Length: 241
Image: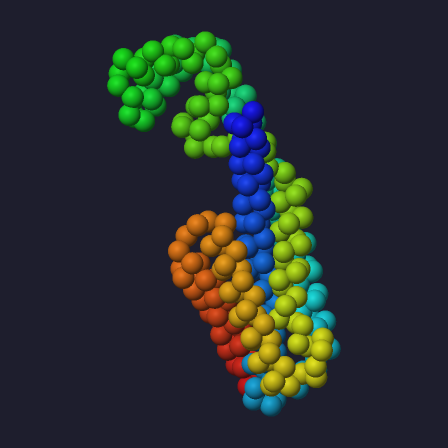
């Protein structure tokens, strides 16, 4: 009973980590994409040539935000669906090969087990046993021959929705100051601060999801956003000037 409870808890944890991955990467792209609009307009205004109002920033920012969010959400959905279809197709093909050429497939599994470190005698015994269970054998071949994991526990719809929601939620953060204040230099600096805070929060989420070093997670996330912001600001400054 304790083992079953532990397994259910581990499964829920794995699901949470998977959705957290969608949140981190969707949110990072949302922040960078929207702040690029803000930074681009700020760069154009910097030389006093292009006087762009706050409404223009919001219109372009929101249009870009939702268009890219839908694109990313649908892309995540289609990618997951394609992965499911590819896995099922290859697994069905592997089952046919096991049925039509059982000895050849047994030898392939034997070699895989040898490469994984089993002695020849044990690998031969294990391959012989598994060859009598085609479903299990196919699963092992999918993992070790093709490097593919069973994606059935993932939901393409939920992955797409989490990506979309994260993109919109985090991507709207750079625009918040423009909802509350007139478009001035101070507004832009507040947008920089809120964007930086959001990137740090995403780095923390990435650290929680992956277990990597916290300094690396935060610094990489912030660095990517900073580079994109400078590029957008520079392009706006060149065009505006």
